[in-house]
Length: 198
Image 1 (cartoon, rainbow, N blue to C red):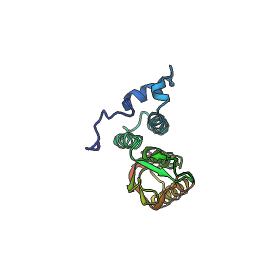
Image 2: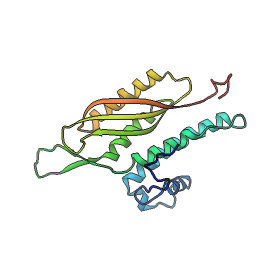
Image 3: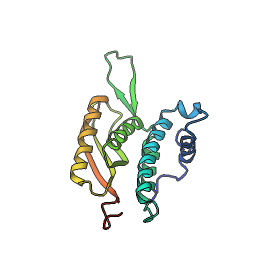
Image 4: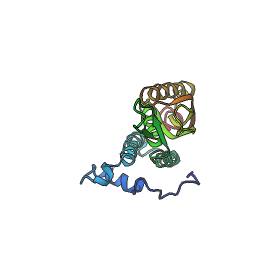
């Protein structure tokens, strides 16, 4: 199901997900500086590559057997569209009062997505930062929705994602994270379900 607040043709720094997907399918050739020089586009490409690998693995497992329920793919793509947008500006502390350093909300969501996607059996669907991120030191809650492979224990994988995300945010961003909430929203079937086949 598509997010009603998100147009299907939402642009990522001037490009649609279809354009970015086609560019990726061409092996990023010829190189497009408008895409390669955009942090938002590069984050979207990285997420699309991870999604492509997972989808390809599923299709190889399920080829010629049972139709794939790919509704979860649409939810992941909607999350990617939202997550790679620059969003709010998150200030960083600096000893020089004249220096103005900041992260974008999109860069933090991209970090969360890459951490979650690196955990076996997990694909991050959507990430939301709740709190006044534009005020240095304000408390922040991170909400992460994930899709998991069938057979992966929900509680275990959610805790692994929560711990990994909290550690990476502590390492790379000056945020006061009060909680990391992980919700399993989709289960992708594999060969271990449906009598040996999913």
